[in-house]
Image 1 (cartoon, rainbow over the protein chains, first blue to last red):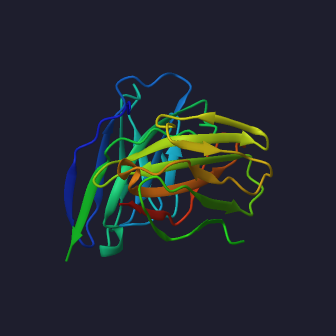
Image 2: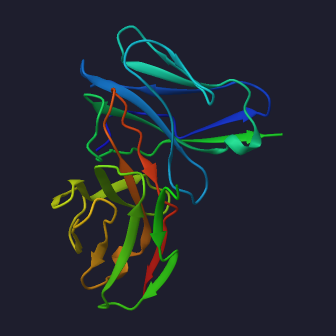
Length: 112
Length: 114
């Protein structure tokens, strides 16, 4: 079973920031927070990951609380192409050895 | 680089038939995995491999076999297809380095078992 919990769905207006929350109630000290997304019918795509500090790349920003029990993925200017299922996953020691445990994820719908 | 490729894209089988889903990667990744995704669900791990000649079971291995004779290829065999194996199958590859573990997924194989 997935160790993270996410809201089943969220909406966002195009051009606005999308903030997707994730609870990591059982995360351990050496586990990284990873985010993937799956656009309809495609294979999942890596977005971003972090351990303790906030991270930013060309796709998104990741905010991790100090106790690491929750994280937020931020898409700063959502577009219609960001409509997808977003998954947060705890990965031990930074490597999964190819074994990811997916939950149900959050369905993000970006509307005009 | 082609990344992760999967063939076929679509397949229809009759109950009891066997077949092999192909997966190949050209990124020299050590780790390869097979997942299945049922409608409205997240992905579930079937089998994985940490290198050529090494495989292990994931969450839902029953009814599937794998082997890894080369770094590049990781085929998934359905021994005797059942309707419960109707699903979308994704192959993925990854490597470990510098605290990153980005998995690269193929486009999927959509399997229907009648």
